[in-house]
Length: 292
Picture 1: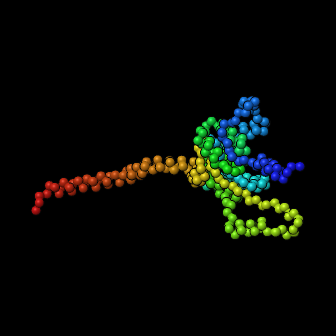
Picture 2: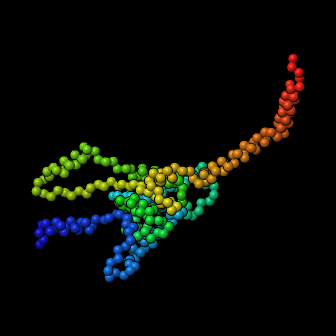
Picture 3: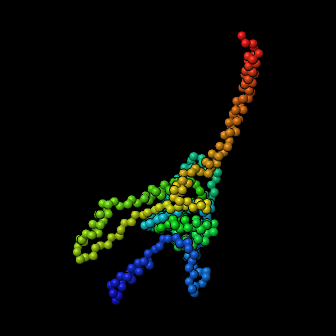
């Protein structure tokens, strides 16, 4: 039997080994002596690496929203996915009701958003090997995450849809408020209080965990965006609206010129020339008349 101090140290080491690290590491792999180079990974890790690589490759057309999650259960995660899909469907319905989508929607754009919980260690390897991103962008993405990591991939860049999804996330998982001093004092008093039945082990109670979700950034068309920049992108109009505004700006001078020419055409042009002729004749008569 191990001494109490040795057993305590062993249990602490076991807990440290069980603690999961959520950091995304993009450092070069360590070469161990006697190990094959390049390293050979198992089937599951290879599948996840290829899957994460395809997700990064789709970022040229499909925006990737980076989310940090904590204390999410499986039912709560399923409910969050449903709320994201409902928000996306409402945004698409509102757009079609006002006639903002006259062209047929492509199959890629019709796909719902996909929320994927990532394994940070394997995602770091895929992110490091993703050639279109430079080292600064890769390091910026890696430094964004300090907890559980998830990626929300959108079918296309649609700012109203992105805005609706971000508002749905804020409603579904509101920011956690910090505990007040009274709550901290009450929790400390309950922890320091004597048990109700001395000599008997207190009943173990599972703590009620509150899910947390935070926007940490995005990867849109090969560019890394911070959370404020993502909010700014969500406030932009759609691509069809921007095209209509550009066409309106370019056609406004031509329309004004056409309006001036149409007003000066026909009888208006004749009256304008007649008035100009009379003004010239009056000026000439005033110059020729002798002073009194």
